Amino acid sequence: FLVKGKPLSWKQSEKHRAYVREHGITQFLNILKKNQGREDLDFLWGDEVEGFLVKTEIKDGKKAVKLSLNGAEILQKLEVAEAEAEKEAEEKAGCGTCPPSVIFHPEYGRFMIE
Image 1 (cartoon, one colour):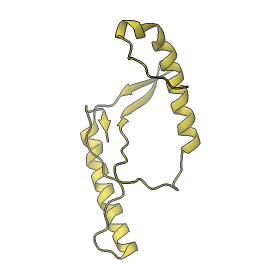
Image 2 (cartoon, one colour):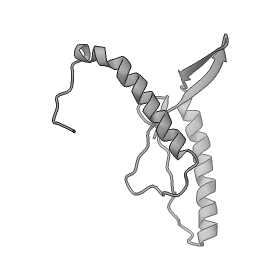
Image 3 (tube, rainbow, N blue to C red):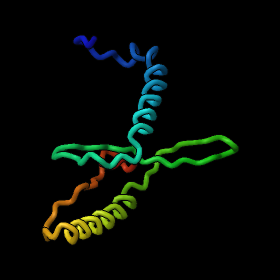
Image 4 (cartoon, helix red, strand yellow):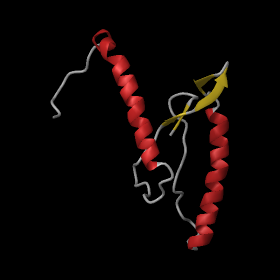
């Protein structure tokens, strides 16, 4: 069902954006629910996950989601957690220099990590 296509211009894409937004969010939530808490697969070399940092709040009885611009602070906390996990893995495996299973990096903006 896949065919070679050409990207739409911004103007051409206008009539499709609401559909893509709605179905993209639904698809993401379905995948998240299906895989939430899953621990059976290790990341392989080169696997990469990029994420947006968001803050959720209820304001005037309505739910709101906003981009969180504190990526630097979150990365500092993750570095501490990485070091603790690495030390724990080394003690458990007895290898002394086990590579970390996850490494976090800043991404494009202050609201993203990789």
